[in-house]
Image (cartoon, rainbow, N blue to C red; front, side, top):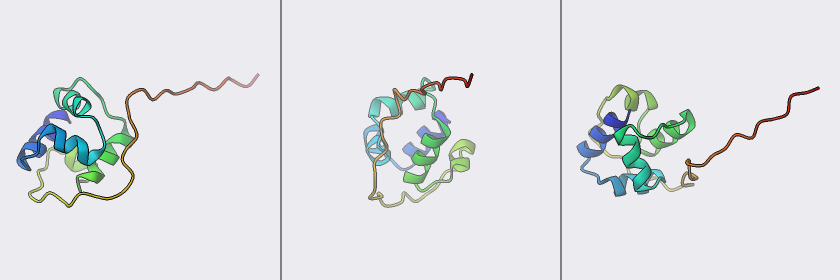
Length: 92
């Protein structure tokens, strides 16, 4: 996934910073994804692909899109790092 994201970003001649700004992530997080050091949740993958005008399957499979869609107005992703799942107590 990270290599495919990097290929698409370079195909569009975007810097990591520009891509990060478009999808609402930090440049450091994008770099970690591209290097395979960070994993995306399915929700984050869907959000990133949507901001890039891609279907998540296209991003996973490495299909390149020639045209970069216009930047979307809308809510920027919340910080995906540091999300915690609070365990629910088991019913007694």
